[in-house]
Amino acid sequence: MSSSPRSPRLAGAALRTWRARQWAVAALGALATALVVGVPTDVVPTPLFSRAVPVQWWNYPALSVTAVLAGVTLSTYVRQPQRREPSTAGDGSRMGAVGGLLTFFAVGCPVCNKLVLVLLGASGAMSYWAPLQPLLAVLSVGLLAEAALRRLSSRAECPVPASA
Image (cartoon, rainbow, N blue to C red):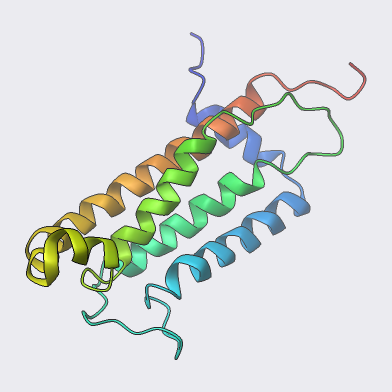
């Protein structure tokens, strides 16, 4: 029985080979993602931004899961010093970028988004856009999870030793 290119077993094997450097990049990437998405959307409260619509309960777990998955995906770009790794730059990188962008739209204030206001107006933003935001959050988490799974699986599938 062969493993698929995006096997959770292979991804787990790749995570077990990570050193402190990969885990540090994952943690810093998760923190950076939480701040880059959370501060402008005011899910992370600061005096810099405000919202016209209160933060929804699901915004916090959506932002947290997104941050963790983005950190893990980002950390797959860190080269492990003990081996020469094949290039996997195209493996899930677009999915991760789109997933991160969708999270921004998913957790943002529905009437604070200028694009949504221009297209739908304030009542349309609340009537049509706001109910779609949880679906965008699920889609963004799915895309980020797929990106992380693909990148991790490709790392564990066929590692190339440094002597090759």
